[in-house]
Length: 487
Image 1: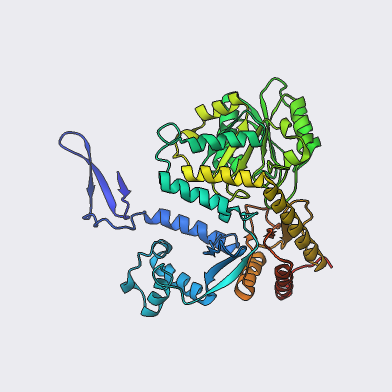
Image 2: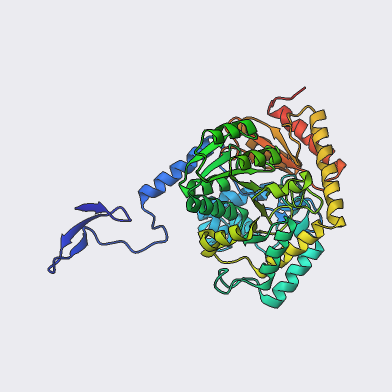
């Protein structure tokens, strides 16, 4: 039977003298090339990407160079220069540009000069400071001297990599020290670190649900990592309305009383900034003999006396059976973790493929995380949190006073509703290009269609003068795009 080869050339399968099938091309095979994906697949993928561009949900990666000594500013080459680089990259591939492997014979001299001007050995034409209003490095810990000093010291002693998985040469005393520190932070028996909290949530939920044969009850606003873990478990699931204890209880009451259950939700929701009624949800879950799984990713480091999260601040941490958090936001590094009972953590450690089959985080990252946790658990950390709270409270007030449609929420996240994907993207671009202000437009699937927004984060390093400039810039953009106001 004939079929298409990888280059679209018809082939014929014929029996050999030995009776085994042989493939005979009707035309000589072309030489192998880098572009070896069959045309059909290329076409489908391009059409899918174009559909995202058409509905303004296509995501671009803003290339920035963070300034550790001048928070919250970053630098980027001039907009005109950046646009030229993008146009040139379309002809040669973004990967070549980023890796600086540019075939200079394949582009005009003017574009060649633009591309190569961004190389490390060739300074850009000029750089302009950009104020960043959407970083998850909430407290600037990624450049805190106690953290960077620790990381550098450990790298000099042990190198930059872990050397293997946790079970094959990839566990150092720094990893053990971090897990002990995390367990103490959350007042749990044991903790376990992962390469990210996405992996921690996915691995833990799918491992527990599948092996316990559990039904999962999930808040409708949960993060994609939790949804993925629940789906990967292939266990039954029920979705309760966002932050709605009554709906959760209704669903639990209608379930099998003898079936294991997991109730999963977040403490602070990253896009809308809402906070969950942690204690109430946990009490309801426990009344139906369910385990509680709470994601504190956007709360650890930011809430509570020692920075353990919203549950610590509200005095209900003991009601959470499994808490997950990140090292990549308020703590300023990278990685995720769970904290729970000794037996539960050991179970996930023994059965969770997302931990077993991946390389461990570098020892320097683990050591830096301990340093960051210690700072944020101290008086210095409490002072940082207080400054942070004052900063985002002032920003929210100024935005509301300016008549901008601020979505009401009690947390440090300040979302401003746009409600249209194209206008959200245009607002982001105008703020950046015309005012050197960077805030990321948030669209589907991160938020529902029609709920597109600009998500603002004020750090302890944003001044009132910077806020006033931001408000002025937003006022101009809102007018130019004819966006709705509250007054």
